[in-house]
Length: 245
Image (cartoon, rainbow, N blue to C red; front, side, top):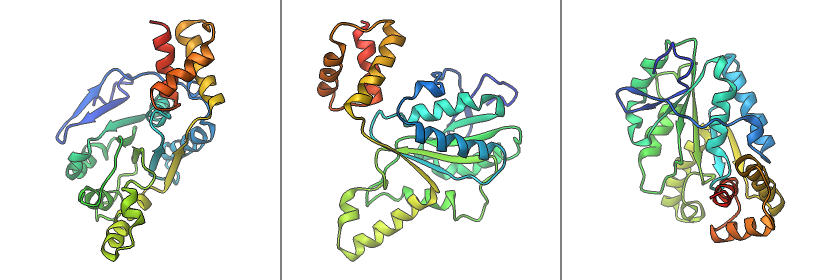
């Protein structure tokens, strides 16, 4: 990552080096509809992070295509001039986290969110043990200019089967895995869209992409969502693009 370049908002950690990500979709605050509470609390947390005030690692959980990754892109663009940068971190490289700390700790003019996308675990996964120790629990302090942000489709990161088990051994595993969830002090939920909100988002993208509202677009948008398994912001955008083909 070129620390002197204002155009490089993010990079990808390979385990040894940072590779610049030069093309990031621009997402503005007003581009994310019907997640106002989620935006407000995330913006406040990031503002505190940048200002070196008390802040929390964030877990964004919820429905597929509901805006979790788009929220991160929005935060990057909103706080670009304040030095906010992102590092995309593959979970299989977790043992190299301290190596990344050494590269970023002294870059006092920038604040880095370390992004883990779409994380989840099952009862046989040992990754959570390493991850939770690094986030909070290891001897080396998390640098003040680093925040962890993870996205997941599962609120508790682990299979519901483990949560519901009455077996003592299973519950011990569950409790250990839940301790990872607790490492994220701020959890932000993204919930299913109702029909009105889905159509409102579809209308937003139709006007943005097609510059018009086709005849009978509401019915077409609902049918499109049914064919794709549900209503989401992602599906609404896909509908607008499909309509414009």
